[in-house]
Amino acid sequence: MRVALRGILANRMRSALTMLGILIGTAAVILLVAVGTGISNQVQVQIKNLGTNAIYILPERNTSAQNRGTSARRIRLTKADVKALSDKTRAPSIDLVAPTVGSSGTVTWQGNTYALQNFIGGSPEFGDIRNTPVAEGRFLNEEDIASHAKVAVIGQTVVDHLFGKGIDPVGQQVEFNGVRFRIVGLQVKKGSNGFQDQDDFMFAPISTVIDNIVGNVDSYTIIGARAANKDMLPEAMVEIRTILSQTHALKPGDPPDFIVFNAAALLAAGKAAAKQFQLLLGFVAAISLLIGGIGVMNIMLVTVTERTREIGIRKALGAQRTDIVTQFLSEAMLLASLGGLIGVAVGVGVGHLKSATMQPVVSPGSVVLSFGVSVLIGIFFGAYPASRAAALTPMEALRYE
Image 1 (cartoon, rainbow, N blue to C red):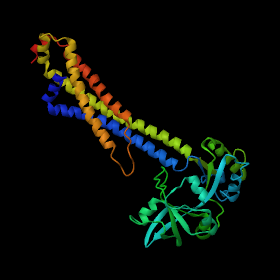
Image 2: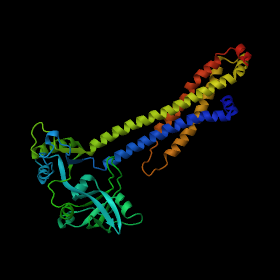
Image 3: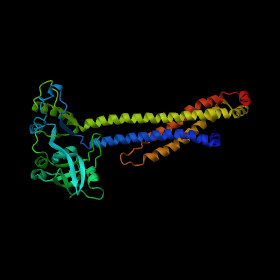
Image 4: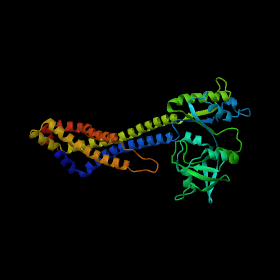
């Protein structure tokens, strides 16, 4: 190892550039796996924020060709649907059902205007289904619904765009489409669920929204439901489809005119997508490490050529084939190990830097794996140059110019 270190230090720039390839490859493995894990965790947390027992029912907007045109059937989610779904004898797996109505428009505060992504009229039960805890203030209650109170809960995105920093939104008076609301709560920040920003919303009592915003509508925007527990989620989904098929008078073979989905299905899909993304990032990082290994082989072949006469002298003095192989293999492994150690330090250091959008998660397994692979790469790619050096006879090595 002393001889190997002396050989590396004899060509500092060349050795540094060779180690740089291993360094980049090792750091890339750690960082890309950390990013993949961070994205996977973020996806799972954001989808769980929807409520893992939650089920959402939407009217199907893309009807079949036979239902298009002037004779197209009006697709609705009605009070009859909500009543049927709330019937415990027909849907024993469901413990909560809550309809909502939605609207689009702008919210205004002291001259500042913001185009709201989601304005939702709902009930406290829908907040329970959607898993909507508040960071400040309170959530809507039954008294707000009964009294048609002009109060609302908002998300952090609305606060950032409408109020700015340093303003407590709770207690502020805002206007939505000309109707004044008092903010009573701020939802815990949830981020994006992959489809929309879960913090860009305003939630008001459904009774107030019907009276002052949307009027008497003949269809709800969304009906939320919650399975009694996770194990009963599949049964709840089947019960919902069966009940809605009956209330919508669908004939056997007719396509459903409603969409039923749940956060658990999104979570499974998100996990699968994140896993594929992690594998892709790992493959890219492995290529970087492989390129670093080729650099090690290249520099060791050059080293063997430059030190051919030294090899001849060592053999003439009694060095065996294993001595020569060990000498050059040690140098290759030392190059790769030093590059791997620095790469680990860089990868772990950068991986712990916080980002506004995503927090990488450095895995101890990826650190051990990347360093171990860097050492193995040094051995693998150093084996051929080392065996080539050991194959030289003393006479041809001493005669080499």
